[in-house]
Image (tube, rainbow, N blue to C red; front, side, top):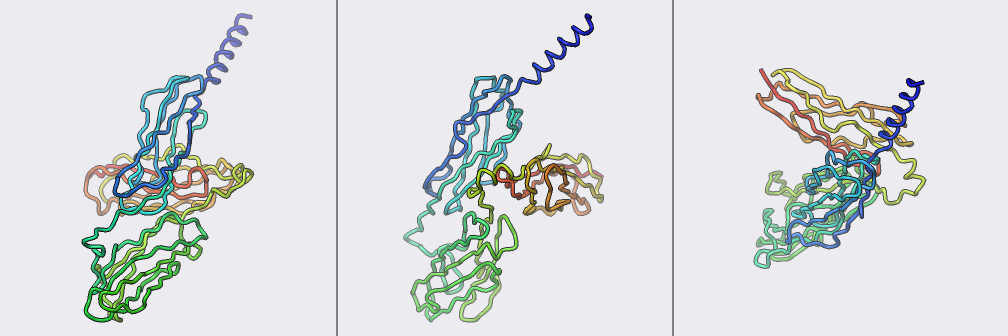
Length: 360
């Protein structure tokens, strides 16, 4: 009898412990900065939240969708009923136009991953009146060398205008070459007289772009048919092709894929010089519809990354492989990151980190 009573009491305590859980409740999850001036520098917003659960809450980490956004957060445990915050700092430098960025909060709360969003429009820095065309491209002067697009929803097009001026003594016919298939350019007027100003209109049609995520294409301005494929004649077209989740219905949201991984950081430990080592990140789809790996964005020479499967069905798990080759690496510690773009509305960009140490 005493044994049964002991087991019953143990079960009650176990159930009570299991029932204790932190609950994170943000005052708002989206903040619109509106129009901000590039010249004014960084802007900040504080997302406040309350722990409405019955157990202490701890934020494990906070991850921004790009390097232009720097998050900080409450480090100490938040007791039930108490408040904490996540602060988002956005740097508009060199990023004219509209922007939408996400900050993912990972904690021990019942909702383990919460996605916050900041958005707004950056008003470009005013061009100096003394030198409104500071970039020299032969006899053509331009207001900038980078044509910066904003986030472009897949299937949509976006237009940017580059203002130019003929600073030479004769007529100049500028033509843009080496264009990718999804960019169309129109120069007006086609021929610029001395001291005449003109416009180069760049249209990016994401429907014709085979890739997702960021792009940074290098094109050349050819003057009067004279091809000089050097840095002095380079113009860059940059932007980011994303998925428009704002049009999803309630039912589509309910059936959306859910990206789940136990960890976004892996430490491979010591790797002998001249050898290879592979890190595996397990990814599970907890949603209903298939989880699509849109793109792996990796700019590191030290690691190569590839998904085991590009499509993960409901309840299934696949692996993202990060290969480290130390053949050309000097001894020392390394920490590299890459980004995975998916069709999960709340986790469309996930950042993974690989660490290792090269030894003899």
